[in-house]
Amino acid sequence: MVMADRLIDTDHLIDHFRGARRLQADAHDFYSVVTRAELFAGGRADEEEVRRVLGGFGELPVDRSVAELGGRVRRDSGLALGDALIAATAIKHGLALLTRNTRHFARVANLELAPP
Image (cartoon, rainbow, N blue to C red; front, top):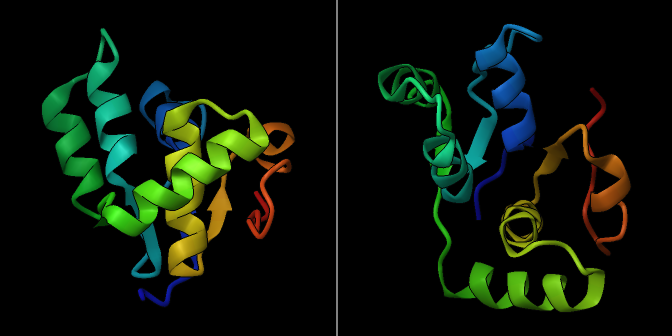
């Protein structure tokens, strides 16, 4: 289990790339590999910039336990699968989720939301 402070949701990284909010990497901040996929799916993504910025954070994979928990989160909360996997990653690793989508993620039991 990784002991750290926050899991950064995709929305905060998108804000950073759009210049709406500056996000600096901290040794205690991580992102889910699902976020990497979501960022690369963006039509206007500067892939080298995405790699550079993500390189400052720790990356957490979707392993079997995250996948199973993510499936249960999806079933119980109605979140999209990507968001359910991000929530499951945060729960499994004891991380607070830094997100603007608090209304959606508030439906997830045992998920701590980080203050903005």
